[in-house]
Length: 248
Ligand SMILES: C[S@@+](CC[C@H](N)C(=O)[O-])C[C@H]1O[C@@H](n2cnc3c(N)ncnc32)[C@H](O)[C@@H]1O
Image (cartoon, rainbow, N blue to C red):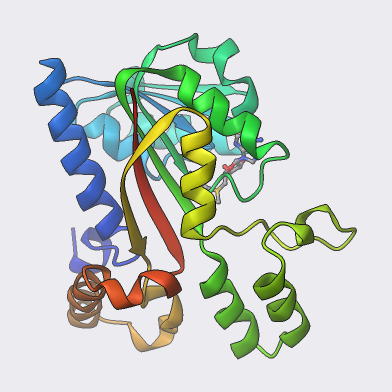
């Protein structure tokens, strides 16, 4: 596999943080193979690699097309028997996995689009076993303000800056965006303990694809991104926040 395919600077930091959480959970539970639910897991960008490292993964997603791609990708990667796709909604998770059935719930890039965000987070908490971990990635509001302004969409940038939630209920909604205090309050309100919050996709989303077109540049961007993710000054403007939270 070439370097371009092997490294993905946008998701490397998320994988590093998630792998550390999985390793700690395997140690505390004494089980190497964990039960993971990937809510809104789509075509399996995270689910299939998680199965490949030995976990059982259930993807719950409303999109039949995404689930079909998931099944194909899992079969191609030789993990068809470890990945189950179920058509469903985040807020209805309990009906799919049952209460306290999961060691880990992955919810990446989904809370921006669900109708009922607090219902979704409550369902995620209910699906976790005590000591289980939620891995949540959400798009961050301040980065979206910068991106809108740089694209010349000044009115949208102003709406995002002034009004964290109000834009969602409008007839011309922008996707929901979060800030750190908001996502912390959301998860804590559902009974989860927030252990870690990382800013991710700090620089990768600002870099045009056309300037990263050989493996050495991909590797250099990945190294730069890793350094920026570790730098607290960038956290507030990272394109996304990766939160790890534990069910008490
Ligand atoms: C941006 S994609 C993220 C896919 C994947 N989690 C990832 O990180 O690559 C958003 C996913 O959320 C799914 N989705 C949309 N509404 C949902 C809902 N109410 N409950 C669960 N998933 C939903 C979409 O079908 C899509 O697969």
